[in-house]
Amino acid sequence: KQEVTQIPAALSVPEGENLVLNCSFTDSAIYNLQWFRQDPGKGLTSLLLIQSSQREQTSGRLNASLDKSSGRSTLYIAASQPGDSATYLCAVSRTGGSYIPTFGRGTSLIVHP
Amino acid sequence: DGGITQSPKYLFRKEGQNVTLSCEQNLNHDAMYWYRQDPGQGLRLIYYSQIVNDFQKGDIAEGYSVSREKKESFPLTVTSAQKNPTAFYLCASSQGPGAFFGQGTRLTVV
Image (cartoon, rainbow over all chains, first blue to last red; front, side, top):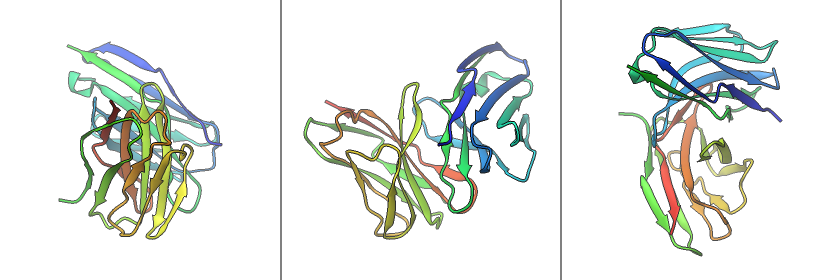
């Protein structure tokens, strides 16, 4: 059974720092990996999707990498801002067939001015 | 404006009652999912459906039921058999890679 772990569980940083959030998974036979953002009491907003054949994806100040062989993904946030404060979740899907995401518990990020 | 709509946003249930959470999507996606989120637990899969009139149990299906009579709708019923239903419920849909989520329903037992 796929298990997804996110480290750290919580992070508090001053504005302007560059951040790295980590996601590891036990079964490397994944279909894709997706990073989400969740604000308190809200649903999930997709940030980046990495297909199993890709190594990384970028969107603005966000960069996500994928290393299937080691079972790891990192989400890099450049020049963090208070508006980045949220919980970040990664989800991996099973190979073939439909996309059925398995989630980590998330990293709760606070960026203070 | 395409997306997933969950209703209601807040729901209160008395002991012994069944309640139904609504999930509607206009993305024309085949697959739909229900997750439960508890503090510190992450998201856990309750049920999923890959096509109309078909659905499968997820990791924590006990005490829940679903139906998929229309492509755009995937309602979740929390039955009285679910002993600890207080949680945040999230519905999602997908068509190929990548999932899209609704804004969630917070269910509280009173």
